[in-house]
Image (cartoon, rainbow, N blue to C red):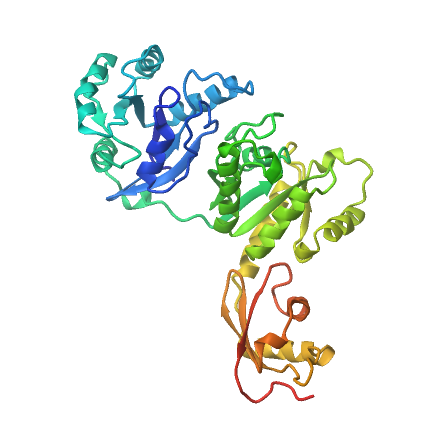
Length: 443
């Protein structure tokens, strides 16, 4: 099932990314006064009244990219224009008609598609008088808008949906089965993996470090099931963050982890595990996210034994000792589908709920093997436990005094329950709560 596509285009710095954020009512695209911030197609689904459509932000037409990615950016714009059912041509009312605006207009006229011209940055009434100057571009009376203030939002959406076909029940978008965040340090192969999953050149792949800046959501389908992959900017050391673009890129990478059902944590097989990798692993652990440690570029790691590499990874990142490791080559599409099926297994594990009797039997066995250490005059006691939530599996343990249980014993319980219950490869969360009850198992 496909939904209509609405593509935002225009020269650099007219407010295209602000418009996408305005219509989506959340900050998706990075907004900066610097030219060329948006490089990939940044997409989001918009639901308005009874209509659903995909809204796509694009890079500035005519931009000269500082990293030499101009051709790649223009190729992404071409794809977005080709897919578009409606084009939103954004101009800046404060600058008037510029030569680049004329160039964009000429290109759009050749496409013979529905085009709405949007006069952006009409932040005060005085700018309303300047809107008519854009009539000469040949797309009729421009719609006035202030993307930063939200002025004109409803009028624009009304105009967009008036050009769309009448929605039918089948056009209502279904939620993806699973959201996958693809994270890792720079040049680990995240964008290559995204394109392999999407089966198209969905994001720019380049040897230039930091090519991806936004988080890019891409739907893909396997065996009729919908998935959502979130490509993210590469994480780097804080002292190497050069500007606010990279700051927002990292914030979006962290947000992608929080949004995800399963995290695909990419490690470059040709490089040593770095401090950046370790910090990223720690963040995944603190968010209690199911995670696959994906060793990418395995085809280039000649003569390396997988077991030795496993031992090395877990030694470097002991907090992720529960996470399975998958060896792939995103570029050659080797073992990528196996990785997706493994992600599905983790997704199901994280949603599993066990009975209270099953859980307490496993806890009793763990207590028989190793009891918490006595503290001064008080002995720690666990009475019983119950599962209160899933994704992550969350347990409340009723005890005599929560202060008597440290992180070491919590880690021990986690490992024991993981070995006895169907949570072998996902994180678990524990809450210790004081309660006086009959003890689960007597000493």
